[in-house]
Length: 227
Image 1: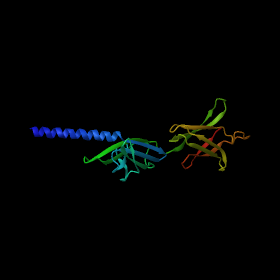
Image 2 (image 1 turned 180 degrees about the vertical axis):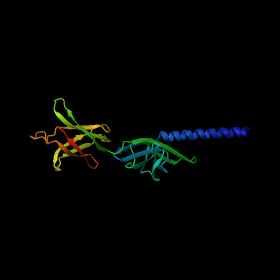
Image 3 (image 1 turned 180 degrees about the horizontal axis):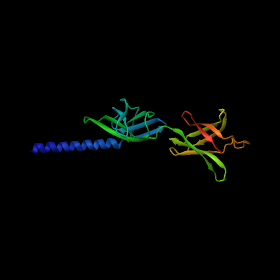
Image 4 (image 1 turned 135 degrees about the vertical axis):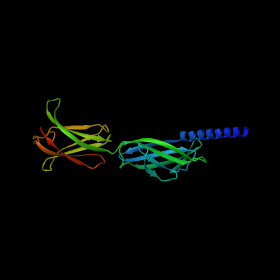
């Protein structure tokens, strides 16, 4: 009986040591995931070990959607007498929707198997503009304006560009804005004049709007000027 108790006690101590060591390893772990459009960059560093078994990405349903090969650390450095390994990954999310994901890394953990560390991140989605609708409004001065509405996504800090063409494919007016928000509606008003100081208003009819956000290909849509 005493022998059984000793075995149980030693097992509990071993489990405790594993738990403490794993906690210490995770505690010495740091990471960051950032995006520029559909392209992402993830980096991580951890203390103690410099070997690694790879990584993979899980979607919101915990389905594995991407794998990364085993790699050696790009950099090994010491801080406060502790050795750290630094790793980085290039993420290409162009095939996936905006949403929550997880980057899972794992590495050999002494003789007790593998240690998994999960890094949750949010993919904002590709930058885009999408024409939605237009309507005639009256501004604060009582002037009639044509208001054009667009959906936008992941556009904070990017340029929004618009060109209006008549039915002869002639450029009538251009607009350029800086997006202060990422995913909210965007709209702008046009009074029908070719330029701010033009002496002639464009006639009613169907026009083409060409529009794009920095880094994306232009799109076109037709709308009716009804001023």
